[in-house]
Each structure stands twice: as structure tokens, then as C-alpha cells.
Length: 150
Image 1 (cartoon, one colour):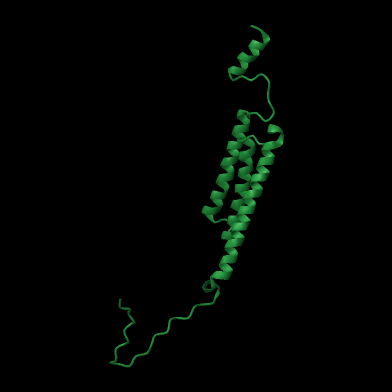
Image 2 (image 1 turned 90 degrees about the vertical axis):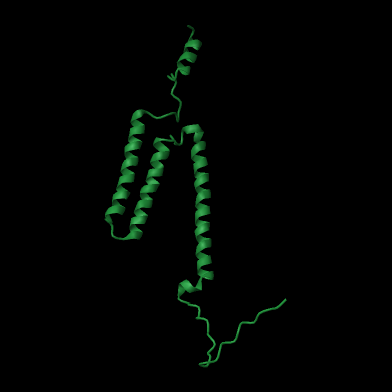
């Protein structure tokens, strides 16, 4: 068997002789990512179910922090994203995507806040007055509503 033929044979069998940068991770990497994901899921679950922090807003912020860390763990250990993979284009694409998502989320929250502030006065202490009823004398029937005849 020639060297070129042997090289093709080993590559085709799934045993790559040359390790490419940004390639697939090892079993140890996958287990590290899996265990980190389990811990990063269990801790927020425990925080919420046991009401450890006692403040729902603080608990929400801490849970979101754990979520961000878990996203990074998934990208590094399972998606194998780093600055060396594909010449750095995956990180550049990720930064672009995160920028678009951030603009969309912040813009949406901004629009909803201003709509709530400017169009929902009943929620801000300005209650609409109750409709006035026309007083009637006892024994006198109230006037019938005006009806159009065709």
C-alpha cells in the first residue's frame, strides 16, 4: 500500500491522522461540558425551588447569569467555538449575531416601555371616570335609546 493510499484509507475510516485546529473535542471535553451543564442547571433550579435568595428579582438576575455561563459552556465544549476554529470566522459570526439579538431585544423593550408609558394611563394612577347615569324620577321611565329606521 502506498503512503497516499494509506493516508486516504485511515482518513476514510474515521481515524484522522492529522489533527485539524478547531476539530472535534475529546471524550474528556464532552464529559467536562456535560458535568458543567448539569451543575449550571441544578444550581438555578435549587435557587428557585428553595427560595434561597428571598428576592424574586435578585433570583431572576442570578438565574440569567447562570444561563449566560451555560451558553458559553455549550459553545466551547459542544460547538467547539474558539478563536482558532475556521480562522476566527465563527467567533466573528457569533459577535455579529449577538449584536443583532441585543439590538432587537433592547429595541423591543424600549418600544414596549414607551408604549406602556404613553398609552396606558390607567396603570399609572390616572383612573378613567365612571360613566354618568342620567337621573330619573321615581315612576318615570328612562328615555329609550335613539334608533334609526330605514
